[in-house]
Image 1 (cartoon, one colour):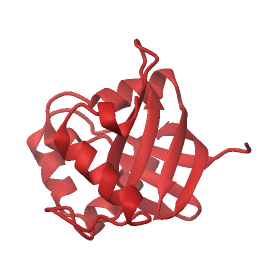
Image 2 (image 1 turned 90 degrees about the vertical axis):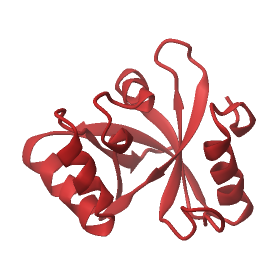
Image 3 (image 1 turned 180 degrees about the horizontal axis):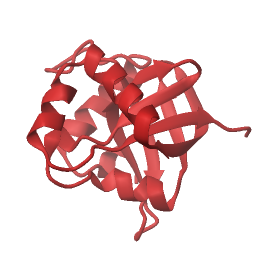
Length: 143
């Protein structure tokens, strides 16, 4: 799926802005936010989809959080990464293949707190849901 087939105009607009401005969001409420584009393959459909996601760095790893704004269910991309962990990441002007790995326990807590320190809304998402919000690390793989 290309950005033109994205499920909503919100994501489509951010994806276009991101790519037009070498990885920066310049318009709308997410202007200036540190986002990456995650292209992943649908668990059932096999269709590629792209999602703009907030991230933090942990050394050479990129960290993403499956918060879905504190919703009671995981975002669709969570299930896609579980089924198909090979993804494409666009961060800034960089584009690379990566492997997504869900982290658990103390590592999940540490990395979740790292994201929440940067964007406090994530702590609020955690307070509003009963589920444990998953955290993934994205590590580059050889081409």
